[in-house]
Image (cartoon, rainbow, N blue to C red; front, side):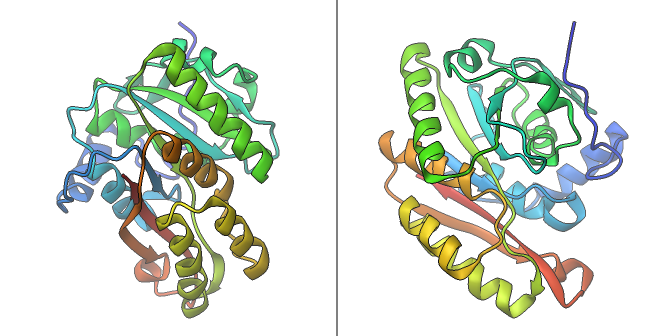
Length: 262
């Protein structure tokens, strides 16, 4: 069986299954209220830096969820927007691809792009496998992050969900400000988060551009906001925010947030 092999294990997260389970168990010890979100925003950095924040995002979802996670991550290497239809490997086992939903998106399938060393999607998979063992995935790599592409992709997602009648949660994978002083990162990230909480993707784009906010996954976030809004979402809830400096003590940091859209 052809699968998408894990490539970040041993770098972004532990490769040894027992060690990875211990790390994830520790992250999920922090209890989060069940919110039944239509979408979440979670980070994709190395687990020592952002794993606790990501767990807050996944922690608000019922662990019995057995539907599909539509995981949208930015392409850091310039690939076009594309979907993978393969099962994905994790150190904890293989996650089944919801191939019917993935193909219903009617966007290009590009397994070569997904096989690259891209962390924005892969770092989400151990969380999903550990917390939701019966869930499936539809992994989308987003190249063009323009407002027009976010509108197009959100429309494809809504159409695919309507066709397949699938139960899905949309995951937008993104870190926030990159390698700037902590006080500046917190200030800028709060502006982006404010727009996300109000589900205003147009305002998010305006603030990203006007303020120069270096969030890497603004396109996936905007796509998720637009799709979930059409599905009936009313607001975003900030679950956690921290920076890499909280772990490293470094003066220049990367920002991480977990947000539920309900």
